[in-house]
Amino acid sequence: MVGTMPQQMSLEERAKQLGLRFFLVSYTDLLGGTRAKLVPAAKIASVEKDGAFFASFASNLGLGPDAAEIAVVPDPDSLIVLPWQPLVGWVASDVFFNGAPFDPAPRMILNRVLERCTSLGYSYKAGVEAEFFLLRQTNSGYEIADSQDAAERPCYDQSNLMRQYDFISTIVGYMEDLGWEPYQCDHEDANGQFEINWTFSDARVTGDRHVFFKYMVKTLAEQRGLTATFMPKPFSHLTGNGAHIHNSLWQGEVNAFEAGADAGGLSPIGYQFLAGVLAHARGLAALWNPTINSYRRLGATMTTSGSTWSPRYISYGGNNRTHLLRIPEAGRFECRAVDGATNLYLSLAGILAAGLDGIEQQLDPGARIDDNLFVRGAEFPDLAVLPSNLLEALTCLQQDELLMDTLGEAAAKTFFEFKHREWSQHNSQVTPWEMTHYVNC
Image 1 (cartoon, one colour):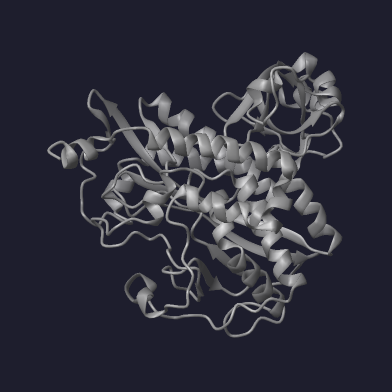
Image 2 (image 1 turned 45 degrees about the vertical axis):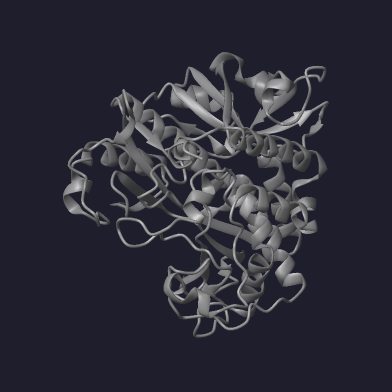
């Protein structure tokens, strides 16, 4: 198992020990896309030293065609051997430009916030709940892959889960082999929707694993003639895909959120961190929910199952899934707004920056709310709400000085350029709904 190998070994040495012939040297761009070069193991030593070079204009990191190449330097500690192609090793990478760390790259943004966290005496650990749909493409579009998966309330349905046993068990087996410690998988609230959970870890490790998980799930689905999608809201009448993030700060082996926790489940430090996330939630929405489709999920009307499972109000509660932030047990809290389109590096960086700000400002989140906010939310007029569309979320992000500093000027500029273009392109389209409703005007 790769995780047990000595950390000081070079990638060249690991290739010899593991029998690898190639490395996928990978990085994540500002739109959450995964880009890579396939490097023969015989040439990996020079790449580990100097990086693999990518044309900057094609990198989705904001550089023009006149710029020199970016150098993508693999992180040996992130090595994952492809379980379905064991001659290939995947490595997450840091990005450099003109010999210096390239600040706009998402993994580099997370690295900077993690360094600040370390300077304050903490480490940040996170887990993610990755939801996805299994679809089949037809001449008329996409449909649920399993035609028998049609119940109004399919959540946790045993038969629907077990009809995908081969697919789910293969993924879980691979995750076990990789040392991720998967512990539960289930059929989710929508038809054709599944979730696989694995054990939390240091935030950067969780970010790397989430990138690889999406690649693995999509690849194995394609091998079966299916499409796996993490799209936030593929179907208007069904629950959307979340990527809920569980958060905790640690001091060595001590969970700082659990040490000294009250009956509500968090320590004073934990509540301050949580308060920081609440204070910056409207700006964070642009990172948690980065697409136009994201707001179909957040602003959804009722689904066929009876619930959207996505928050609207900026609130927190105990083990209560109607809130933005949920404290399921002592020592951690869950952020339920994050969806399947998120660039997890950016979401983790934003949550950590906001939480540390809450600690430094000694913010107080106020009393938790135990009510069902899906039903009684309107009875709390003082609660702020999450943005209702991508443009509003981008405006909130632009107005949040802390988050803008976290992204950095170059990354923010590029991110806004991409996202405002996405918004403009969307608004220029005439939809079938508009034709149906307005053709007789």
